[in-house]
Amino acid sequence: MTAPVLHIRGTVLVGPQEVRDELWVVGGKITYAAPSAGADVQTVQGWVLPGLVDAHAHVGLDAHGAVDDATSEKQAVAERDSGTLLLRDAGSPSDTRWIDDREDLPRIVRAGRHIARTRRYIRNYAHEIEPEDLARYVRQEARRGDGWVKIVGDWIDRDTGDLSPCWPREALATAINAAHEEGARVTAHCFGEESLRDLAAAGIDCIEHATGLMPDTVDSFAAQGIAIVPTLVNIDTFPSIAASAEDRFPTYAAHMRDLHTRRYATVAEAHDAGVPIYLGTDAGGSLPHGLVAKEAAELVNAGLSVIDVLTASSWGARSWLRKPGLVEGASADLVVYQADPRADIRVLAAPQHIILRGVVVS
Image (cartoon, rainbow, N blue to C red; front, side, top):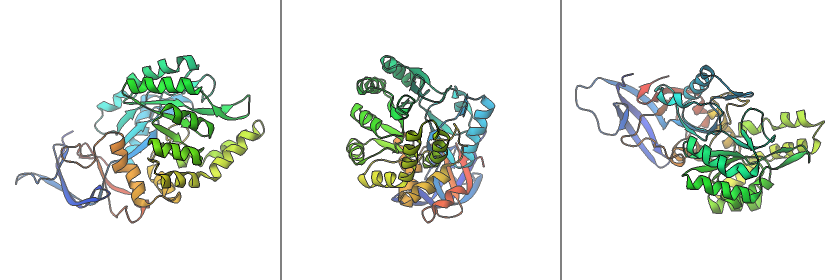
């Protein structure tokens, strides 16, 4: 696929404090220097953001486990067509490396396969192991992934009838240290309160969902720079989860309803304390792909400013995942809108042009 020369004009949102009125795309790369005269140029005009980021998605996974390549492709296309051009795949049993060879599909930063306690997670999703094997599996997935490892920090304990931590603190500390030795960061699925204390003490880098944050863990996360990815579109399923569990596990059901009720306040308190927040949807398991605009609106509902949400879904998220934005020489992965997303976050739901690796793909 040959990339044309593109002249992107309008309002180029390079960062929260940096705005330009044009950029060029030459050979699939961003440049701020006009090409030589005589080039065949296609002009695109509007408000421009770096390709959006879904920092919690699962390409290659559905509600039952691994999916075939054709389904994975549809998932990746749905993300791309929503303007999401960079994904952090937060755990998948499928090998999706073939996507890296497709110039028309988003870039993926992988966390390998979930690592869970035996019989303490969704069937067919994870390596299910015991604490003595945690560090070994973390090293394994660190070497398979792209700088991230995903563990399951808590889940329902059927003996107690409620959420409870999956791992002893000592095992977590050893495993997280092993990941760091391999050059990987660690994130964990956590709904409840108690697991967050153990994971913070063990040196975790990020928490998915983080609905159980309390004042003490908010302070710990802020002090340690532990990021959270709230996945509010996923948290909105908690009432239905509670309803299905009510008869067998009433304590768990009540707990899930409470976590849902205070979800916006939890995110707002974390943000106000300075906890880093990034946008993720948890697409893949039971949720469809392409929900980044809906999640952005939910973060605004939680009290973040539009600029904060744009940072969480574009400039800041790309920096956090160590991928470039709209900088000289970077791959031209960007989205063009007909209106200013800084004025109304709902603009993200209607991209006008999607440019991936310098080619207008949608």
